[in-house]
Length: 290
Image (tube, rainbow, N blue to C red; front, top):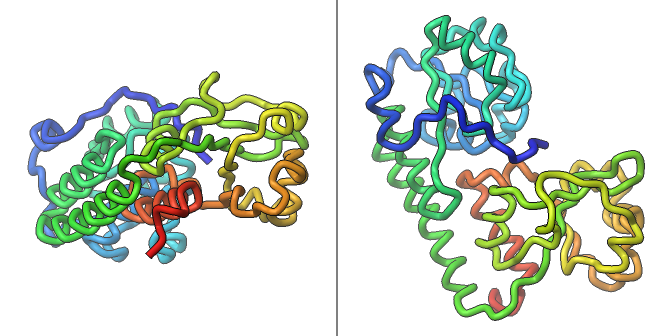
């Protein structure tokens, strides 16, 4: 799980990225791509096919076939040597790519690197799809995918129009030695909550902070978001809730625990629209009747 505190160095965004490197669109026959970031990998696979991808980072889960590809390591701790061994035409990555020395090493070796950094919004998701489509010379496919994203986000916005209450959501990264580790203010997290019609229960701190079971029980969020792997490792939803000290507070309301693939939920990729909509459905069930 990444820390959602992206480094902004070496970022070339939007249309400027197309001017920063020679030969903006990749030739169809010369496409050897390495991807870093769940959102980027999903978009590239959708537009160019999994067969065009030579390696991915460990946050990349979709489509499932990419999990069989060579790994370049964790998004923020990539292996320059591993990437160079794949001899890519291009590395396409989201804003969290790191560390800086690995990026510098790859640039020095002549690897073309595209960092994808667009606003954390519905419009930003569509712009991201179109930009990657331009890089891959897959503009028509990108327009179709962007239209799907647009339809999903528009339907969500329509359903949530005029809401007067935004339920609080607490992001629990996991249990650190039995102590819940909570996620505070982070761009991707807060933007996801905003689209889903919620608010951050831990907005008084940034990044991650241990919180006691007693503190959670004394002021329980309306909902808890947690990684599905962490919930499974704890022994299931009931066991996870109990370890948070929220059994009494959540009694009779199992829907208040939302177990999700966080790389997708907070990733602002195409599948993220479905995950955010699923979260919104739990926060505002009355808006999804009929």
